[in-house]
Image 1 (spheres, rainbow over the protein chains, first blue to last red):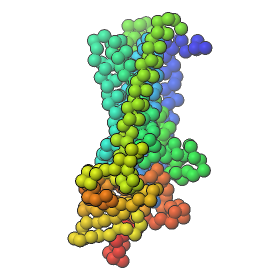
Image 2 (cartoon, helix red, strand yellow; image 1 turned 90 degrees about the vertical axis):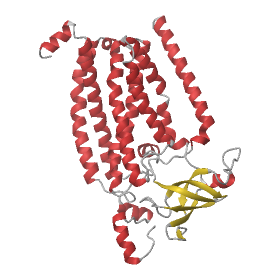
Image 3 (spheres, rainbow over the protein chains, first blue to last red; image 1 turned 180 degrees about the vertical axis):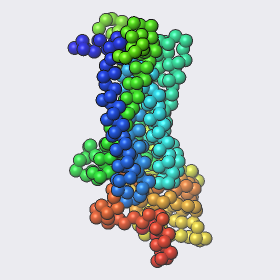
Image 4 (cartoon, chains in turn cyan, orange; image 1 turned 45 degrees about the horizontal axis):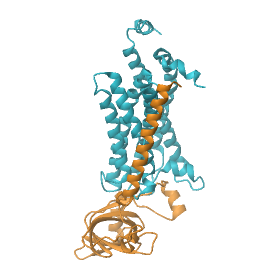
Length: 250
Length: 168
């Protein structure tokens, strides 16, 4: 059943697959992000309550969403790294972590900028904000553990275990606004999916948001792929296939 | 799957399930403390199965909707008082001296932090505005909800024009 996956345990196969995948994420990502940002920040209508301030949602929501999405991806890589002990998965763990950490930071930062004029405070220790901050610490913890050991594979194992344990935080972040009362509002996108009859956002705001969601995904996935390929080349620098690539061309 | 991998997978699964269960139990036990604020009904009738009521003098947060028509300036003209409700029957009063957030309006959800000075009265030191996950252009909001929002920049103009409070 998993036969088709096995070749990618070899770094060279993963490198070549990544090379093929990269343009499919990078270019659509850049284009969608450019279109979505201009559309959202300039052309989408203002909100009835918040005026133009709500526009930061076009950055805040995609970054928060993929901060969680990339964490799940990182945890899957960690599971493969710990159970099957495949080195490519260990490198993938470290390729994803900084990208996810930056996304988490962007979501917290834009949230603070949004919160100050609208709520009246930069920060409040409500369940949503606190659990998202914990996500940032988990990312930083994974990155720190990875480099904390002299033996790189021991570090990857320790970081992988932390990454997997931290997955528990993901449903907590998502449901925090429903389980407890918080200052943070509920999820616009989830509301839209679960109760189609009463959309929480009209189409002329929703489209730029969706375009931005996929733009963020494309750009961040491309960054992860590039980081992973760099790491593969760095580790395999003495192998003939890597030398051939580094000496020139494909 | 070879036995070593199987063992590692089992170990990982056991650790994850145990930790998930432990986290779930902790959060369940703490659930009332994780809530950011009391609702007016919880303040009056007590919170949770144990019906625990906060004591007078306690510092707490309360969150609810500002009752339309209840906003008034008292005494020095700087202190403002308004009523809060939620889905329940209870109604409490908040008094606050300071600058209100832009989103503060009658009918708006707010969270106030302060000291409980009687069973249904709070002297707030901070008032935060809460907004929901619905976003729409002004024209749609007017057609759908009958709400006309005056941006803060124009509000001052309007206030000086008709001399009213301008919290609608």
